[in-house]
Length: 580
Image (tube, rainbow, N blue to C red; front, side, top):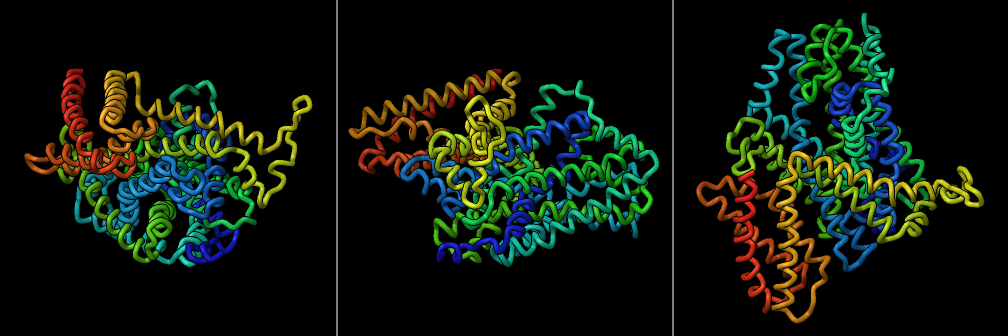
């Protein structure tokens, strides 16, 4: 009980549901879902998305809540508690790192929403802009360092203020205020949108599915959206679940959160597509739909000077409830594992993330060096986006499903889920011969088999193996050879054995760290590549010392031989990659 009072606990079931729903509901629902729907055939995509939310999203969400409540810890502490002295806690570390990384680039777009509240008021009431110049105005805005940085700093300050208040007085209290406002604004927008002349065409596009349009691309897009919008794989639901009491009904809560998330996404589409068709706009506008196309619609729409600012207020609220959960994941780690005070953790982590956010904002075209990083030719914003929202988010959800389904055990997970809901294992859904199929048995099958397979397909698709199979093959061979060589060197120079499973993780962890921090080191004039390679050696040393537990007397011999091999292998790898 003392631990709960120190860390915080939800004061009510409603408070948790609104907070968890706030975490799930974000730019993914209001910004990403509508443009993906428009690009993927409308209603057919919506149906597939809803199926994936409940068939795959719900089992993963319940899984994360179970792990959090069982341990009453952050993602790292939770997996350390359930599997002591094993590498599994690194999966929790990936969740914490993912939360920080997503917050770093997510807050840039969140800052845009603040800027567009101001701009929509300015354009509608004081300084109208011509419709055909909206896209130019957007490009000028995101390339204006002063505006972009000021707005993201304000947004990060709002996020830090909420998390600074704690679980009850900060996160829970503000979600109780913000989530009803969000729904109210959405309903007002829907009423205005569906009453426009010609809105029926948009309603038909959005609600009348043409299942002949379904293909692999639509299935993958719907699956990706389901995981991204539910905040899965980033440690948020593990952290929020750790503040639940043992009396709470997690099954109902997870179902309500999934339903609320899907409802907000659905309502966002209902607010946008009728207006889009009524004013003669194409639905296949892509990511610019919200910041370029919708302002044009608001200018044409009766009462658009009111609807425009309301929409961007809605977008800002959705973004804020998500950034709060992202920051809380990292803050909870430092409170639990490092013994920091909440106020100290919020200030240090919040300011650190703000610095990364500024770099991400500058990489949208303002700074040429950050926009086109040497060697990888990607912007820093794109590096963060690709690393965390495309890869580590799905990898985290995948590994946590494997952990509960195959390592910790479904029996223990089901026992935890039963607390607060005995019908989880007792209520028979249907019967096959003499075997009773319960909610728990269906959830077990989905979590242990179906969800991991689906997430693995998503990860594989994100790698685009048909386009990049040469590069993927070279890097895969590099990691396999590197692992074998490191194992052989350790066996040759060290008497006590190191588990192969730990050795396999060394190049993977190092790659992740280098992918995040390497672009910053490359920016150093003349010596950037030297510092990057030196940093890789330091990472190897730390991993060998603290992760592989190699003694200091032997580590330098192993590190020297391994560094020489890596240097030669890297030159060969880069030669082959750039010959493609």
